[in-house]
Image 1: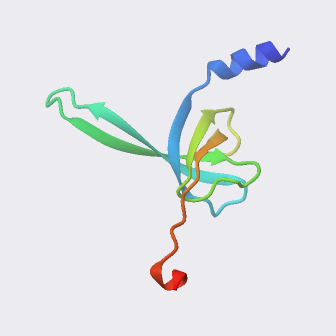
Image 2: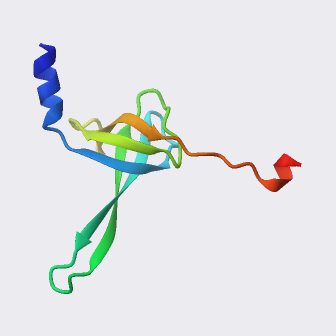
Length: 99
């Protein structure tokens, strides 16, 4: 049965993005950046899309880079789930805090 579940996950979309907001319970807002080529002018454009993703343990914080995977609709706007946190945001202490 596990092999069947793993195959099901293979067909789902995966995106990498940065957490923008984490104020909600078990939900984070992830901003995904894509690069597109303009059809007429052949210039590369950056577009950003925001997605609401389910974060069961509330581990993802603002600034973290996360992998999100497509899932069934969990609420009105939530269609993604956080699979893993790729990198944590590094907190740099300010000069006033160090002294």
